[in-house]
Image (cartoon, rainbow, N blue to C red; front, side):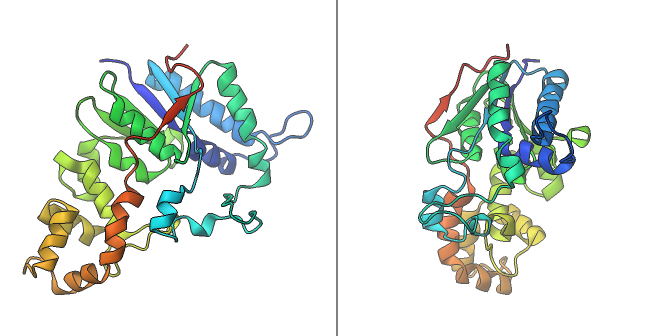
Length: 282
């Protein structure tokens, strides 16, 4: 089997490392290094266990892109730091973590691993773009963020998500079959269906309101029954009897939200990605 391209959701990994390890881990000068240690350990395990041919640590150039906020002002609004400067949406990050991020980037540079970002876009968009471009190696997305489940695919090269929400020791490798089974969506478009299901159910952690009264199971059933979100909305407008009356009412009431949700929820496939170096693992 061809060795994979590993795409790391860097912020997801170092945030989880920071909160998983004690802040008593410090350098001789007293600087906290728990996030650095946890992130470095995770990268080492990825290199050892997954043996990627290529690896890119993907970064947020803009954690709350304006194009998403313009469409949905609630997008990640609850995460904006209270002390942010006027006109600048600074993410609320613990001071002890913020001072470790430059060290993590220096570490990646020192060991010869590539980082990538795209002006005006999130790391998710960088990962989405690099996945969309890849036609040679299988893609493995390493993240603690379920939003990236939308990227699983079987062609032109397989793309899977290694979900580390419970740490590397309990990491789950999820491809189209696993996403389809877990969320009861069609395997042939598991990634796309997951994204559309997310639009309907909403996600408070990202400020997505969803459609009132439609939870995960109902969303999955509706997407499966009508094939796509567009198909579901067309059926609701046509008063298709297969759309439950209550769901139809709620869908039509959420027309404005559902018009912008696809652009907000789907990761970009054409972000202007720039790299610090070529991506082969040294």
